[in-house]
Image (cartoon, rainbow, N blue to C red):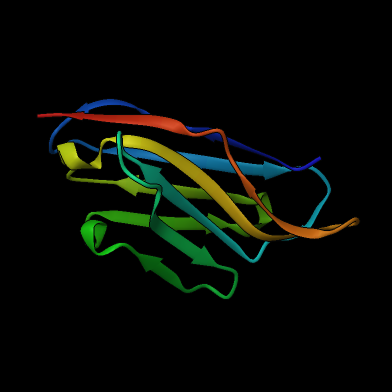
Length: 120
């Protein structure tokens, strides 16, 4: 059974940094995309950054120049380095693995989420 395990959330002051990690496991043959979404209180879940298997990346405009996504395909792990954090970055951050191929099917998976709180 495929699982995504996230770590690295926490409380940080504005201007600080955090690094999130997400490791996928469970009979995985390949993963097409690995990325991070976030959901702030009272708002819809939104894309933060995604790393595609071919090496390209995509970022939300609000985090460009501050966040960096990196992927270790050998470890089925994705990282999100978040610098110069702002209070508006506060929310629950969810890891997503898209197009995960196993022996039985190909589908997307979500982690349980990790809370990031940025104080002003």
